[in-house]
Length: 89
Image (cartoon, rainbow, N blue to C red; front, side, top):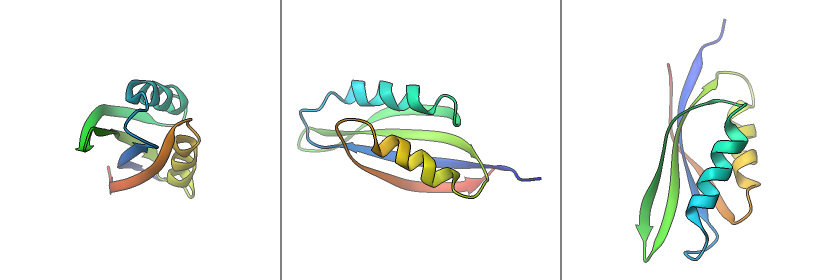
């Protein structure tokens, strides 16, 4: 029986003019059936650029983290999705 993985991901918009709240809302909406979202916050990066930081729980299955990254990368206005941290729970 497999466990779960706690993952911290950061979503960077294409530019500082993107609506970060729209990106955050789209991320929550697209992930609601794929994983458990523990925390979502907006993080200041630099020069007015903000990022969405997600703390999520994903089943420890082959390819699950990659599929979540792909879903997040597909959001309009998203430039980059980084996995910052992960640990078994």
